[in-house]
Figure (cartoon, one colour):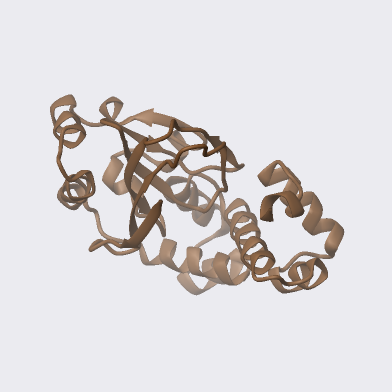
Length: 221
């Protein structure tokens, strides 16, 4: 069982899940976000991923979490996203142990995570919101830099802090997400490659395998 809904915090999604009996490994694709996750009484940070992660939880395992989009997570964590990219980090390595213990023992972990995030909330960076939106639409990062009066180097640095990587990697991740969405809608792969912004179907195949670890056919299965 998996449920998600919009959090009260901007660009943040709350979600919870329970692992059903007989569930196998789950392939978790990069999505340009980082998560604060409560799992069976432990709390950790799932940093922004650059490639797919394989998750395997025992039957009955419970998760409750917040997913931070548009670069909003690092302000709450208190560290740049590039310091936790492709990592799973215990939250008490970043926050006071007493605060993390209160979340771990909470009857409603999502509410506890939300309250803790609200106390540390730093607001949104309009440039990073614009960069995330451009990446989702397949627009070049240079468009964002020009509109915001930033150099490519400045945008790269701010993107590293907010997302864990630069605009080009963010663009690739969002392009992968578009391809998967189109594939799950039943579009032919030639159409997927064109509409998602790949040069051709071979480019689509290379990128999906590089970032997801399996061909698109297996990913959609």
